[in-house]
Every structure is written in C-alpha cells, then in structure tokens.
Image (cartoon, rainbow, N blue to C red):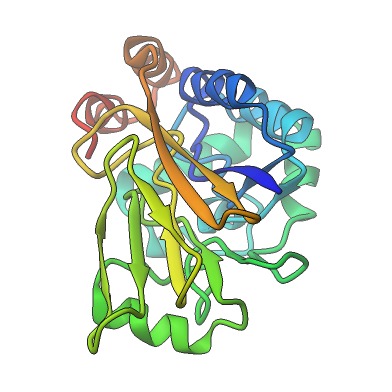
Length: 242
C-alpha cells in the first residue's frame, strides 16, 4: 500500500494546502496525519476541516491536547501557550470535538504510528541515534512513524550503534530490512533549516519511504498569524525553517 504521511500542521493553512496538492499528484491509497493539527498558526478550523476531509487516519499531538485542556499550558513556551489559548477561544465546536476524539498512537497497521515516540507517544523528541535505538527496542512494529520534532529524520538499527540522520527532499529510504523510526518532517512549521513544508511517501509493499518538500506561500501564513494578534515570533520563524 502507498501511503502519504504528514504531521505537525499547526494551523498553517497555506502549508497544508500545498502538501495536500503535492499528495494529490502522487495519488496514494491512503493519507495519515501524525498529529498537532493546531497550535502556533492562525487557521485551526480550516486545517482541521481539511484533515477530516483528506486523511484516513489522524493522531492527536501535544498542542492538540493542550487546546482540548488535557495538557496544562504551563509546560509550553510563552508563544506556544499564547497560541493554545487563542485557539481555545476561537476554534469551532466541531474542531474541538474532532481533536477530543483522537489518540496519540495507533497499532492498527503494519507500521507503528506515534505522534512523538514509541515509548512516549505525546512528549518525547527523538533527535539522537542512541535515543532512537532505545525507542526501536520498545516498538512492536518493525517500522514506526513519528512526528513532534518538526525535523525530517530517519533512524535504523543497522550497525553496532545504529544509524540515522536528516533527510533532504527527494531522499529515499530502503526499509526492507531492520528496524526503523522515520519522521516525515513538518507540514506546517519545519525546524530543520528548510522552510518548505514536508511529507513522506511510504510504500509498504516495496518497503521504501521517499521524502518530499514543497514550496508554499509563507507570507500568507505569516500575515494570518500577525492579523490574529499572535506573537510575531510565530510568523517570523516560518521563513527560516526554525
């Protein structure tokens, strides 16, 4: 099966629209979202509606849980907390209901699906090989998909210490052997130095994964954040991919 995987949209409507257009061109059989549909950005209702329409599966992320009140905003940065509070005040009941219906992990497929990591589906940022190796030892599936860090990354258990790194657009992984932990990168707020939004094309028959990066109208997304009265930092960071 060919699957499009996206994550960490964070209410960035122009970014999500660009990703979905790219996905439509690839024509996968299913589309999966690994969570954090809202937070940071200024168009939560529009993004949630598109996820409901286009995604066959969606997980919940930590920002989604903060908006629904299941996580205290005291653990967030000031700008992130401001966006959570704004989203709570402005999002529709339909958006809130959808977010409350989601879970942070899924074991219903032949790959493991987690918002953050196999050992902590909500909070753990998997950024290092030794950390990823410990997670892979705990995952039930041979291949798992994660989000949360906003960095396009891959890790495998090959070699005595494991291996991994950042993945540029166009990079393809051969997942046919070994254990893997794969992050598509962010569809709304990349933090790997590349401001283009990201998604992953997974083929579970050939066992390959291909990274995609897509240009989008960053100015439009930034303007929406400023017009909403959200912190300027949330708009400024989009153009630098951090």
